[in-house]
Image 1 (tube, rainbow, N blue to C red):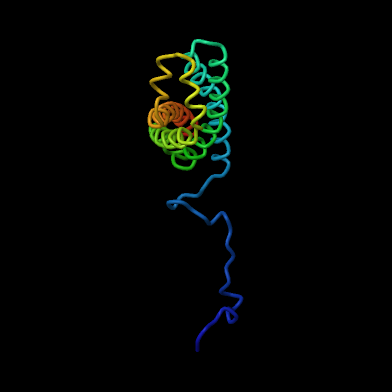
Image 2 (cartoon, rainbow, N blue to C red):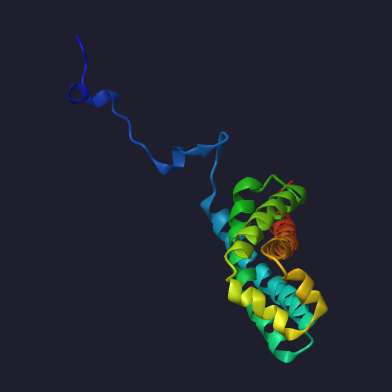
Length: 171
């Protein structure tokens, strides 16, 4: 006798719950990921503000410093939030700081490359009008811009990844 979907008996039915879902035979702790995302966002905002201000200081004028500060806060908070989620998911509470460092480093470089690719050509070329040799060298082509953003967000990702996973680590 063949069975179809309508002939399932009540005894053989089972309910699915989110608690049964596992990743690598380990339950997913949503509270840890939310906590990691919040903490990563705050750390990313602070570290992004510092990196943005230092990068903006290469222009040697107040407008460049303030633009770097603003861009650093925006990119830092978004990057920190995403890296907090990634590190909370990958490292969890047993991964340790080195897992967080490598996860943040890799994901930060990928995010930086993506952000560097979406920088408009007009904004990239306007850096050349400030007559700053360092910015002229870093923004002369799309490759240099992508490399700069990948490097800066790799640094930010490493910092956030180490700190978030170190805070979550339970030996």
